[in-house]
Length: 146
Length: 206
Image (cartoon, rainbow over the protein chains, first blue to last red):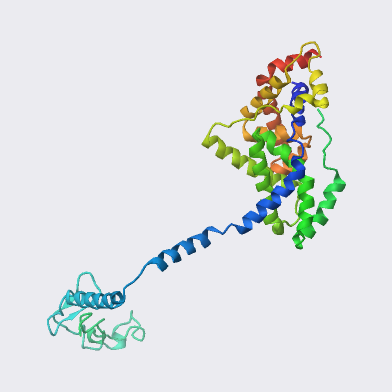
């Protein structure tokens, strides 16, 4: 299928040109737009100016700072009061746990030291006897208590 | 089918390097020379894609503004000619996508001045010397037929049929293979033949 006739028809469109003098004025228009672009502030600059203008228009009374400080102190006290009281004396609790683990009675795992030759399968140097008392609880006191 | 001779001779393309280097060095007058050199050609490219003079003017200004902002990043891997055309094509396709979403495109009325253009009259008269074809009608039909094409098809028709660029040049600008360019041209011509069948008959009669 030959496309030559189609090519000849479409080629006629090349005669469609802009108005006379367009290309002569194009450069001037380009320079004008470039200058306008330079004068136009960026979005970030505009936003900063707007925000600073809003805050500069706000008149903050002198007692507002003292009031804000008092409110902050009061809030702190209320939060501390709402904190649960400490556990019963003598009991250890693991802090920062969703469900506090309480150990009521402590007993050593073993007080007898086995001779090394009686445990042929376990290297005693690697696993020396240990006691639960050696372990240190995460905290002796409940958090946020004075 | 041979395209028209490319309007951008190789010597001019070679001179681009010097102008680009001067622009990158901070000489804005060198970029002015590039604008003067490329604006007629890029105007044609954008206009035949949009079929609207106002849109073309705005887009062409944006194309040169973008090129000016990005020229420091131009490393010369491709020619400046290819680079400029790529910017123009990409921006025009993006614009057309937005315009199609926004509203139905409003095409310009055919140029009134073209009726007096002796070249056009001579070219149009060869279509069918026995029957007087309204030049206005021909222009309208051509523009309408072009707008019916997809953006990808329209751009290859514009560059090959109207601007006379070679397949290899078009392939570089669009970053596709030459085979893709030929294939797009084939399908575009097929669609145009359907839209312009009445004119095709008169052509074949000659």
